[in-house]
Length: 297
Image (cartoon, rainbow, N blue to C red; front, side, top):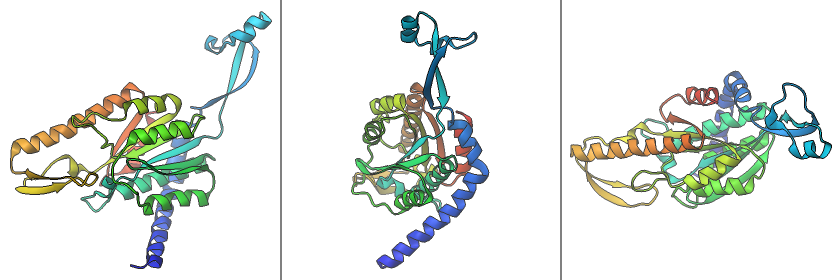
């Protein structure tokens, strides 16, 4: 396939995703998105004298002491949010066993979130990461900008294969100083040998500064091994190979238990730092998953 054909195919994919996800954003998500995220960011407006019924947590003690009369800080809802998509572009995104590839599902979810944000006049940016930050697109408004992000997600070719969620979260914390709404789109397979997440410290800092949500996109087939005899398996990110006797029931059970424990460890971590998370199978309905994410906020 020559470069012009590749470009045309990419444009067709972008247009197809735009038509589908823009409709979803208008018909379903715009209101849910607004109620879930608007009002989460409050900006300081002014100081005024205390009135009966004011929340004492908003007292401005410095002004109160200086003027010897109780004063409170007044906040107003930030009308515009900054939304940043943290997109996992590691090689495991190419995995798919049921006609859907994880990377394509992530692209559609990212597009829905982008258009939902755009409808509410929010700025949208994107950060692409593997085991390094591959590319950062600063937040902006406009259809052309959104299509640029979607085109990058679909056609992006990372320079590395691995996954480092910590690096992406640290970059977000350093690059976006003001509080933003961030979505981490990943399979979350960035774990130690025992299945524990390797990104706790970075998550703690990012969740403290930003309004962070996680959308895990997974393939149900990767969580179990079929009984197909002796097979040579290859890690898509490290390229390591290993012979596995899939006919051994204990091997299959140990593999499934490892995935269950890894999932539970991630869930405990997100609960610890009050990070909302939803899991979406590549062969499932991500619309229901996103609706659940919005309504649980």
